Image 1 (cartoon, rainbow, N blue to C red):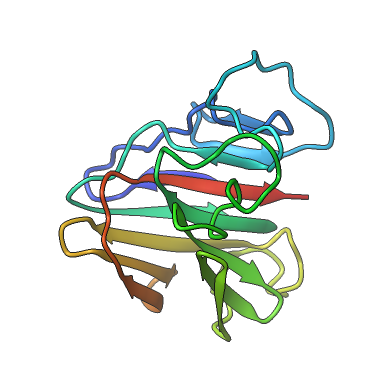
Image 2 (image 1 turned 180 degrees about the vertical axis):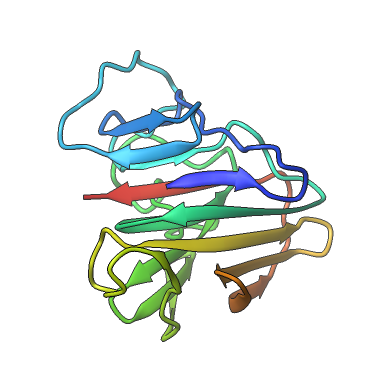
Length: 184
């Protein structure tokens, strides 16, 4: 999965100090992949130790749009830096607490979760590369994320040659960080 900021061609970078040890960062910390064995990352208090998650190094302030190219079981999140990092409880899981918001691909479309409240959207991803079969985890699809901190808007889009809105939520933000959860 690749995270990049489209508006000014500046890439968001994943923070290796937050990456779970079963995640590999590559492509100058713009891509994350889940692997079956632990990586030899040094101990760090910011590391997610019980869930397969990572945050970006850069926070989102003002208005910001970025796109994520995905394959497999990926959750795209926006989180406060203060989210808990130790253990497997709801206080750590993106979307399962009041510290984070997440969009997940499901077999039936997408789900949006915040504070353990789940909303299902029967919107199928637009496959940009692959076999064309949705259930094939080798397919590549793209998600756009728009955050307007002052307006309290978070929007997710399915992106190909066109953009289709998946979901928008109105809330109150302070400084938030893009993040991702990747599973085998």
